[in-house]
Length: 527
Image (cartoon, rainbow, N blue to C red; front, side, top):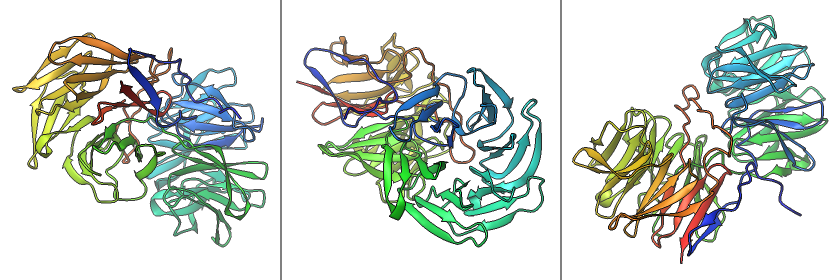
């Protein structure tokens, strides 16, 4: 059978003579998968924070229809719910908004002051939304004016919720690892279930039992709301996000973009296979194993092998929300995070913190003698960690992104419209006139640049200064005609989720890059 369409179908790339392009991973079908809701049409509506997109999935065929595209007025939707008139309410977790997508396609901000806006439900046309943060509020919002009434305050990270058969609101108190309920009129909450696997959604089946996904353990639970007794319906991987029922059929989402139907006897059926939310940073070690940073998840791709998970934000021993990545030799990585840190990390071990208190740490590179250089987008600096000390290599740059270190220790950095060589505390341009240079790499006497705006990889001969385009029409950045919205942070979990398309060079001169538009890892090879 033919493969269903990817989230972004790029035209064939144009390659310079002697170069070939291969995909190490197939394109992803969604930009991750967060909140789920079943529509009256029987389709499953999927919120996708990272892609600023809402899609509808046919649960039988897996066909996907875009409901609100990237740049379509909804930024970073995390959860969603319909009222009786077909209005779709979306929480925008990185912009602190509760918005409404009307059936005619127009978007209206219902309330712009919902910090870390995440859970939303509609009960008898009453709109209820909450804040995924410690001490968060759950409020009811007037559908016309957006005026809010507090139902419950000081909740430890309320997440996706639903009103139960008894008319009370049931919700994960994620920070307490419990499920609570409260009257819609307010009052003291009650604990329904405890000692869970970090619950992040609550829905009800036809028999009145709670269905809850566990982001930490990867379990799908059926819980008796009277006794709190738990039954494991399925065991999946950590990172589950939400659930919905289509009739008596149960479906769950995974942050990576998976959608599974939960069958009897612990069995599951993949409606949509896992993918990448972006990806972002790319590294490759001397053996040709590729490292991939994808926000809350990390992966390795060994030569000739499918990708394998290397760690995740929910499993411990993880540096944080990953953005930049590079090989530090062997199995070790160096990474930057949206938590404002740089770290050295070997998957399975505790990360070694190299620097903290940064703004938006972007690209990172490891050089001779264990030195590590990285860029801070907010402060305009390139910084170096050597011998345990952090120093500024250059400052005054305009939103620096990619960093590379040559075999001789020379540091290069990409910032607005150019790539520069860093020397003596200053940055001097070696390539100008670029659109949006992000990932850069040095190999075989050449500097390679991934220009996301031009969708090209450019090669600069460092000896002669000659330039050439080796690949164009690449599936990077935003799809043609779209503007990728800027994503802010998520409460205490991470800072701004600024995207970054990485580039890395292997020992044999092959180039690896983040196909973040389509959600893939690509390899460019000469010869």
